[in-house]
Length: 218
Image (cartoon, rainbow, N blue to C red; front, side, top):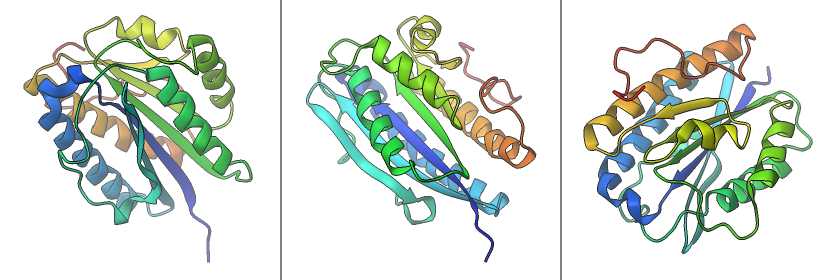
């Protein structure tokens, strides 16, 4: 049997208190992303997709999914996503990226797509700082890892560049713009798998694909 190309989707989602105003839209958007990845796997049968899903706030970092086959994933609801407290972004990135990296040490034929979604700047990490994360990202970008940063209510571009992430998407913290942002993200995710098939550059221009609906702030 032919071995499929493995794609690991790591989604790191801000669960701090400021996300509460867009909680329902965020839950809906995440579920739509899972549906998109399921559709991607059908359209690109040579690929096998897995999802890791981590949420974070000052109360803790939660791994809700880890390398779960996308076809088996059920929708989440408000019981699993309850915004509260502060924003330890670097700790969440360091923890989840390292956990996934360790599991891939003996693998060669794979890609990783890391998606970070936050509506605020880092403000409470204790174990990692921007330098740690930047070094980690720069190393992994040479090893088939692609990083994207989706943000609101802060200087998204500079925050992402400070940790060597070039692919950024900005949204406004309202229901309409959150829906548009997730539409754009889904379109880009489909294009990402197409680029894998065509062996194109995966590091840049993740969000540059044309989409019928784009966030109003992009």
